[in-house]
Image (cartoon, rainbow, N blue to C red; front, side, top):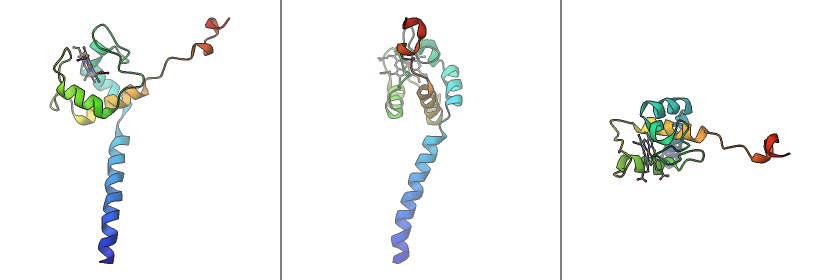
Amino acid sequence: MGLIRWIAPMALVAGLAGVHTIAFAADAAKGKIAFEKNGCWQCHGTVGQGANTGPKLAPDPKPLSFIQVFIRNSNGPMPPYMQAMLSDADLADIHAYLESVPKSPDYKSIPLLNQ
Ligand code: HEC
């Protein structure tokens, strides 16, 4: 009985640790490649800044859960990307890449604009 009381919380901790490992495994460098390979850049710009047809995705991307639901179910001007075309792992990498896109600098830090 005592042992069972321990096993359940330990399994929970191990499970949570596993989830974190997956989240942390998202790789921005691989995401950049997937963003290019899957043509996202053609509509959203090379750093997700927004281009002619696609809205801005970065900096400050929406949460991965939003992006996942959106791209699997899009039935508007953006084509849906199914799991077979773009895996959840690749999508997590793309999200990590979008998160790595730096914000524009504060204009106060640009000497030319502060004379
Ligand atoms: C053919 C052009 C095209 C391609 C390719 C494309 N998108 Fe889009 N995307 C759009 C357009 C247009 C919208 C706006 C659609 C709408 O509002 O229904 C959009 C919307 C989105 C949104 C929702 C943005 C928001 O803030 O609501 C996300 C996230 C997104 N795209 C991610 C991606 C990713 C990731 C890829 C590559 C796997 C990709 N898109 C490829 C055109 C494209």
